[in-house]
Image (cartoon, each protein chain N blue to C red):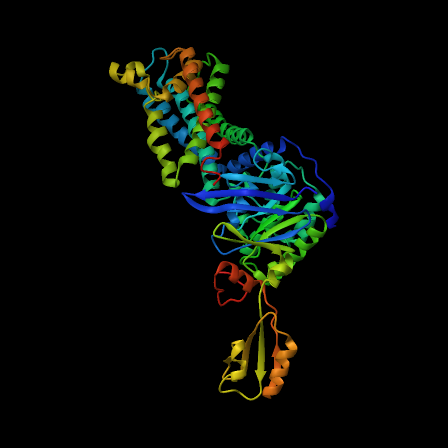
Length: 312
Length: 264
């Protein structure tokens, strides 16, 4: 099957600084693919090269088999892109701007599809408002509609939920899933790793313009060696029992929480037996599932901000 | 309902161009006070000052009143200024606000891009010029010696300055830089290019120097087509203007073709 997107040895530099360095990846039709990385990793530059905003220094981008440079008139019709920054033309209303965008893509407009977009994105009551009068959330909703108005086969969402309230975020992901089920391939970047974990079948992690990992989301999560065990204690401990030193036992919350880092190949039965022997007053036990955050941090060598699940 | 996604839409090759052209026209009509009315009022004031007041006491061309002499130059000044203003402001604002990416991601071709911006700018320039011409009828009767040549020269001037506007919008780094083109290049060249006086009345050195002013060929050619007399032959005026228009078109096309300062 022809890949939806095939990037081969892509390079891009700005004033001598490499933004994208020998990037190669393939996205199959029907995938929801996540492209993650810290700020400056080269995600947006890659997206800009795919969509035509950026010139390609070296390498090729093929969209459904068509070269994005030589056959740009075809590829740009196949791609719908929602940019990270809010990009609107203040001169027009939402209604007019949507008509203009359909026209830019050479499609007179499918009335039913347009109405569906307006309804699903909650733009109906605001159709005749000037862009300049819209709230930030409404501008984002309009940008989604704009990216979809020509029914692209490859939808690119660059940080679509940045600065968006929970309700819209949920509605947006629901809509993206529906579109994906209807056949649209999705490439998304997000700072919210939880979202990527839930949405994407495969994930590529970029760092410093290069590809740091490209795997199925489940394989990426399985990369983490070891597990964390949290023991909530009824009677606080003054110090970690010597028997637990090998598992890097740490006391928190005035000795009421014991954190253990277990090796990946350690049998859980062995752990439970030792805990029983120690006769600790265990009220509750947690085995937090390792998240994409940990994988991401391991691969990029970064630290998460206090706001859990959000990248610096 | 989501199944509508699977119904492919028919691609109309000329639609991106027509859409951009319509959008550009709507853009200047939306702010018509600024884009149409203001230049018309300015030109009307010139007409009043030079036609109805000062013009009664000045004569620079034998057989014609000063109003008759100055009106073709004022019409063309409106055409030039507004054609330049339309492309330069529209493209620069798009660059400045970042919404140029809306065009860069579409299947628009560079020729469609240039043509749409140019035709909208020409329409604005010629609209202003046309209204100034109508108002001028209150101040003087013009002979219209070669009306079609006059229309052709106005169209060529608007085309030329639409291209120059595109070029300026691409090179300008900020609004200040963009206004420099108008205030320190176009305006002086227009004023020194024979709008208000024929170069034949200048001392020989300044008259010769004026031949390096590109505006001279446009203004004199337009006036020659309307009044039937001019400092230059019609062939020279049209020939030089045509070459300048072609050169600027090639320049603008080269910049837009490779997305210079537009695509990152």
